[in-house]
Length: 363
Image 1 (tube, rainbow, N blue to C red):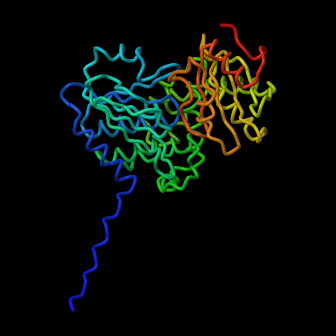
Image 2: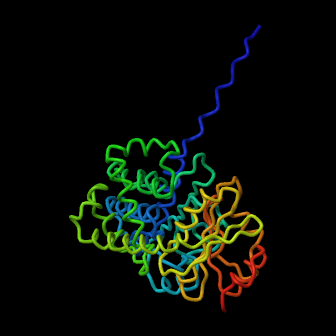
Image 3: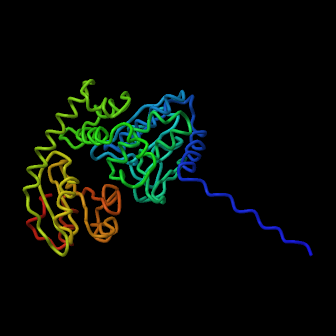
């Protein structure tokens, strides 16, 4: 009797790192090196800055012309304003990292890669490749995704510390990534101190993250960021002291609680609303905490939402979205989100949550 042959085992699924690296290599093949530089667009926090620096440094090492563009307060890569800014630019491609995921093309006809780890709010179209970490467990930060991508074009080990900055900055230090363990050779305290400094400029009244990016593009490790050997570090320290003073003042504002939502409203030119929300999160464990800042950007109310409860905060905001909510509202993470609303929409939103006229703002 003929013996049945066992079927060969199915091929192993590629690791997250391999899948990301292969996707970036394939996308880069569609870039047009002779038409202009690659524009690397990034968010202005430690994760976004580190991701942008990784891409710029890796691409330049591989012989590409690459230029960074860090987006500040109120800027969005899919906005009409950004489309106007890029209309006349000759670009070989675009890499947008840590800026969310939305429908549409950043610059029509330009090959683009979107590298992000937030909850997607739409699928990009046009000549766009999406590399999202949202479906992985644990979810890699944008800087870690960038580090994996960098391995497709250059030797990336020297950029490991940059990925670690993003992991720490986005609270993924203890998520179990091997890269974080490997980066401990740089000194965990030095990495954490560098993250604190790098985050300070974008939270300051000026919002200028330029000095932070400049350091990340030339430093060889976190101690070079904090040592003071570069002039940009002084600007980071000044911003840190400004933010510290504003935060201490805002922490003295008591919350108003309605229907399980604790609202802390204050007026500051600094981006401290996420810090205020996080500070109250542990003290008001049974509530959704919302820190609202009426002074961050003229004509807008910016707010951050956090909770110690196991609740989908993006879903919560979607459920209570006012009619005028747009791309500035309700993106980020399920446990760390927020947004920005015009005064009329804010008043509608806050009334729907059960708050009275004392928490509304003048249009």
